[in-house]
Image 1: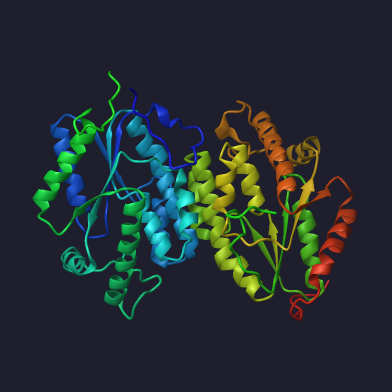
Image 2: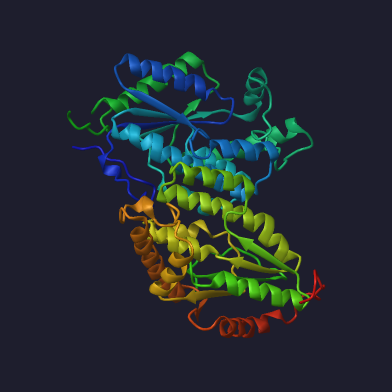
Amino acid sequence: MARRFESYGMQIPGADPADLNGWLVVIEGPDGVGRTTHVDRLRAHLERLGYAVAETGLTRSDLASRGIRRAKQGNTLGSNAFNLFYATDFADRLERQIIPALRAGFVMLTDRYVYSLIARAIVRGADPDWIKQVYSFSLKPDAVFYLRIDVPELVPRVLQTGGFDYWESGMDLPMGEDIYDSFIHYQRRVIEELDGLARQYEFQTLDATLDVDDNAAELARRVEAILVPGRDGSGEQRPEG
Amino acid sequence: MSPPGTFGSNVRSFPGRLFIAEGIDGSGKSTQLTLLAQWLRSQGHPVVFSEWNSSPIVRATTSRGKRKKLLTPLTFSLIHATDFSDRVEREIIPSLKAGAIVIADRYVYTAFARDVARGVDPGWVRSLYRFAVVPTMAFYFRVPLAVALRRILSARPKLKWYEAGMDLDLHADIQESYTLFQARILEEYEKLVQEFDVHPLDATLPVEVQQRILRKAIRPHLERLPEGVPVGEKV
C-alpha cells in the first residue's frame, strides 16, 4: 500500500502530494525549549539506522529569509504583512526543500512548522480561522512532537542560551514594561496557543522539563515506530523499492 | 455579495473613500486614474495613489524572486499578498482614517485573476485577502484582448518573464505565452465582475468619454466627505 501525503486543504498548484514517499516529522515548542538539541540527536540516530535525513527550520528559505531578516532589523513591516512574509518563507521551503526531500524518500525533520507560525500570528492579533486557512496548503506531517514547557521553567534556559530575543519576547507589540515582562506575557500566550493547536492537530506531547536523554530516547522510539512498517500497529507500509 | 469568510467581511468602514481600477495591461486604466486624481485634487480633495509592489522591503524579495525565477504560483501569490498587506496597513487604512481619497491602480481583484490564472485555488486566494478594505467603488476597464495586445506589444516589446506567464510553460515564445496568459486573466476578470461589486466600463471608448463616465459615477460618493483641504497647485 502506497503511503501518501495530503494537505490541510488547498492543493499546491503543480505539486502532486501522492508521489511523495518520505516521512515528515515535526518538532514543535517555544523558543529555548531544546528543539535544536533533539533535532540533532534524532538526525544522528536515524542516520545510524540508515535513513536519509534532511532538516529545515523557520526563515531558512532561499526566497524570503533575507527579506525577513531586513524587515526585523528595522521593524518596518506591518504586523499582518509579517504574518504573510513568514507564510511566503514557509511556502518556499515547503516547495523547494520539504517536498523534494519527501519525493526522494528522506526523513524530513522540521524544527517548527506551521503551528508556531500560526501561534505567533494569533498572538499578534490575526484571526485564527484566517491564518489557518492561509496555511491550509501545508502538508499534514506523519507526526508532530511538542516539547511542552511552562514559562517559569523556560526562563532559566533562555538566560543560559543568550538571553531574551527581541521578537521571541514580543517586543514589537510590546507586552510589558521591559523585555522580561514582555517575554513572560508573550511566551505565555504563545504556549497557550500551541496547547490549543496541540489538541486540534493531535500533537504528541513530551514534557520538556524531564531528562533530555530520556526525552531523546522516547523521541527516537516514537519516530522509529512511524518509520518501521506495522511496528506500532498503525504505521502504513512504505512502497517497496 | 461576498460570502462570509472571504475578502472584506471583517473590515470596518472609514471616513475616506477608496476607488480602484482593474483591467489587463493595455486597458488604459492608469491613464484614467491619473486624470481622475488630477480632477479630485483640483476639487480640493487630498488624494493618495496606491500601487502594487510599493512596500520597499517586500519589493526586494519580490524582485529577487523574479530575477532568479524562484517564484512558483504559490509563492508568487503569497509574496504579492505580503506586499499588499503592508500597503493596506501602512498606507491605505491610515489614509482612509484621515479622510483621504485613496486611488488604487489594481487591487485584490488583480490577485484573484492572476493567481487563479496560474492555477491557485480561487477560494483560497479570496480568503487570503480577507484583510483588505472593500472599495467604495471598483471599476473594471473592459477591453478586447486584441486591442490590449496591440497597445502593449506596439509600445513595449520587452516582456517580463512572469507577466508573460512564462513560468506556466504555456508557450516557448514569450509573446505567444503573454497572449495566452492575458487571455486566461481576461476570463477570470469576467468571472469577478459577476461575483463582486465591480463595475465594468467600456475601455474602447475615447479617453475623455471614459473619464466623464468615471467622474459621474464617483461624484455621489464625494458628498459628506470631510472638508476638502486644497493641496498642491490647482489645475
